[in-house]
Length: 503
Image (cartoon, rainbow, N blue to C red; front, side, top):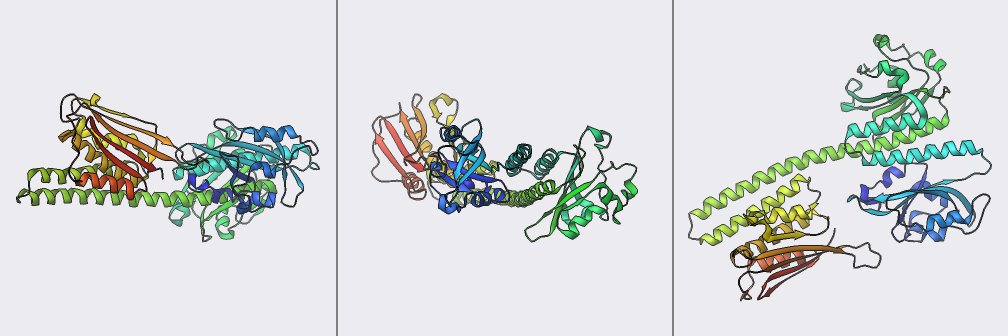
């Protein structure tokens, strides 16, 4: 299930907060490294086991059984979150009192596929105010990790990290910068300042690469200074040429953003805590975790940006290639004795293939909505009577492979209907309907059931042999996609029933 959001486990493993992913059947579907440390179990050991197996009944200290039940009575949260306390059973058998927060977990299709369970160990010997503050920070850090994971662009990602740093630590100044082209002078930075520094909110001077901030790149580790230490440091020059325009600072906390090979890619830096205190070790721990989350996310966003460039180039080349093939085919067939019907059928199939590529191009080859695929495949046959083609079914995204096969199959069915079937007269109609079902007991597997049904056309006679269209449908939708496709030639109209696994 982690893979349903571009494998966020890679990011969650960087957090000190324990997370468990619970599926729709209340079984453990995954856990991060902190959860393994907390419970004593490995992810593999708890995989598929019921949450009830690691929850203890009864009471321990101030944690009562009623809280255990509140968690177990809501196995599949849809639109709200649940907070409470519970007692887990450590692998060694000892009770483990915890606070928890459970919230819905959505896959890439925005479907709630499980529950994300955030867990914090309770220490009854630690002051409640300290525990509460730490718990609130960890919860905010977990929420920030979800926003960072979901960021679609570098700017959105940097803004999410900056807001999280400013709010979680509580500072008047927060900056997150990314070194484009490995140069301080080309730093892309997001600056956030409270109203205390409102007159400097538009400050955007480019760094010159010799200030104290460059120590982060040299040390490649977090740096924390009081105001006295900052002013006494030999690298501190009071902002140099920017002294008159730069906002003042009170204390400094910074952490590097690094590539996998430990090269510096940017930094997070904070100044002036809102409560007036100096930065402490817990502040530093929060920033280090945020920098780790941001580093992984930046690499992902950069890789996706490169992928988009490559896909756009590929789309351009494929489109040009298909246009060239169509042109070559048209000129070649024009000077042959091949029947006009064969000529038109061949070019029509090339056009159908090109149209399915157009659908995928709009979606960056990540699949497409089934309704869009169907409408694109049959739009040439709607003509002046769109009410003759009825399309209905639930919203569902299908894979690129399914887009191509379904487009070609629907084109063949529509072409046949226009020549011989329900669309060959003025009164026939076609109904395209689909539903989703889960044939497996656990509900994890999903199938698409799609039917094409014609009515009101000329009487149908079964063909004496299978043509190209029939073979394409049976092979493309059946064998190639691991499903089934069956065409029936009932006298009242052709029908085609398709069953396909949703990838």
